[in-house]
Length: 334
Image 1 (cartoon, rainbow, N blue to C red):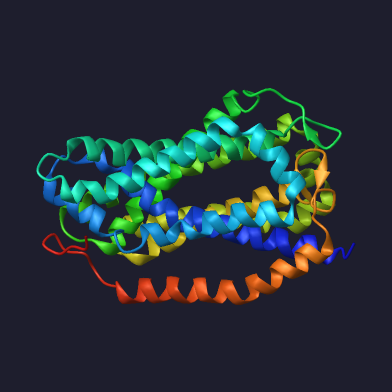
Image 2: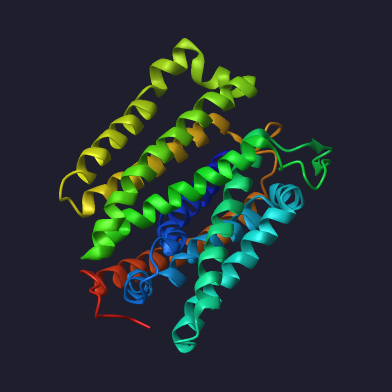
């Protein structure tokens, strides 16, 4: 087997997942913050700030899941039954979020049920993603390259903590997005919320950073041998620095910088998790080479991705450029 093909595909899938987390994270975060105001105009302004983007942001989830199925079918066959319940919850919640996004406008003025569906669907989707993340970190029971655990192996205090951490993190992305894209009371309230949420996200990141090496010797060995510490120290230091700078910018009048620094925190945390688990795609037993498809399959699909990926990046950039600027209280897109 060409050793580099699974590495390329792991990088592509990891990039797709990271882009999904950042891009869909902020519009899920908008919905998580929905109950913080009951003003109709402010809720409209919050939704309008993500209306041109939210459905396109989910493209990366499809690419990540589809890439896993094509490039690492054994991993897909193990991960899906291991997280069947949280994956189903996530997909149903995303459906409710999407339906609520469209139906809320046509149901006015009797749209309270869609407001609830928008908030609940987004919050449950974020929480389910945290459950899956926590379950992947703590490991999956595998025997003879098949899932051998129970349907609730993912249900542990650690995964529940990860679920809450993802909800807080997405809410922070949503708040900093509102600072960047809106004005008036919505932006000012988001700035106050972002300060609290930033502290919450950093606290969750610190807990995960201490919990995982304590519970899993393989992760402790990865981070706390002298050689690896010398190589990996920039990741936690840069994360702390980004958190400090974001805190400073939130206390100023900066608009885009808090959002950019929050994205940087997410990327650095993602890289930290990747470092903790590489090369295991089904931790703690199966590496990316153990679960990879045939090289011919990798090459065949990679040719298609070579043409498809630039198109996705182009239309994503085009949409964000087209709908640049502030969303005012009296403007909208629906």
